[in-house]
Length: 559
Image (cartoon, one colour):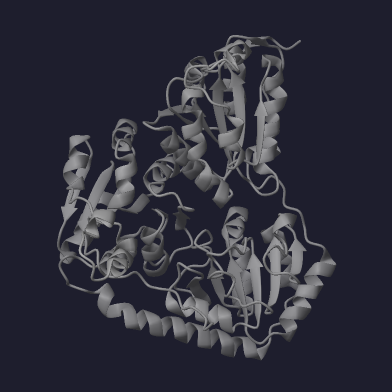
């Protein structure tokens, strides 16, 4: 007969048994459970904002390949939901747990509480209310199953009690257990239909200029090796979405780079010229396709995805393969029939990429002051460790790092914000918690860093060896030129819309007890980065840059 446990002990044992090493939260939620978790070896990471806790969980999940846990009490539930947008858009397995006031408080203007279904419905794959404590075992198992099966996305569990205390103080007799399959993603690797693979092989055999576009789903599947093997056997050039960046190292001849609205000029042009485009684990949205013009409508398309809802969604008539990307790529490699024309095409692709890099070389070596961001990217490329995790914020931070920071080692990983400004710093904390032995570098603008400056106290408290590189230009650089163009010759102050600061973030970091290094000249960048990487603790490298240079802009097909 199973020994009864308190709800707090049951939940703690279930989470620890599922491989949870950290939980991310803002007090006050599940205090009894958090106390139990310490004795089970699970680190409790107290954040300073619910959004930051969600971002930390997202970063942890992407690196650990496991469902992550973030927590907030009833009052903070809407803030936690807001933080799940990136995890939802990037297909990240995060379980968000909140408390809600008891039934006797519902529909009676309970203090600071709103209905939780509304805020969570847009950013979760599934939601469940635990009405009675005895429902917790099967609903928690449901949450792990939903978050890990098919396309991983956040799941929300709403517990009884402002802090979940109604559940924690109950007695549960069931054994704490989560099915092992659902403690990792992907939970399953469905094989492809051989007939579908044969049709793709026939399409490839008819193509002269094929390309692969790998997305976040391919990275989530761990398709790096399978994709490289297929690409180099062809050879078939590979472009990626930002979420798939790093799946092929940037120094490989088959590497085209990031494609879409956040790409370097040759990438879109080359994918547009292809006569067959194979999307692997890529959702074919507006960003990766330059608003569905790259590739153009009518081009031969293949889609490989584990989610049937994505197949043919944006490119009707595509050949589709419903399968885990690794299994599909391996099957396709087994029947691949390379053509001589492919090598000619691959050489043309490599020459175009090399020509663009040569064009950028003077900017990468620029001695200008204020510092050009191209030089910062070149210096970061030169010192980034072979097993580093680079975490980039949204907007220009994604464009700069996605086009100009080289990822030359298969051991390097790239995590990007799916749209939420300020995501990268807390996500990098989560990534470092998941991979304590790997170097983690966060790259963000000053506009993004302002969002969660308070988490400097968190990295100091945790003692994390995390490097934060701040592209400090006292502006929202991505919009600066546009705002001034819209202002035209009219009187007024356009800078009021996009300029702020200046702020010495190195001094701010030191005020939090974190090492800060201020860099104002290009020759000082590399020594500062090397010092930060070797420090063994958290370091903010505040690099003062010029806000006016434009990041690489994508090639856009003629209308």
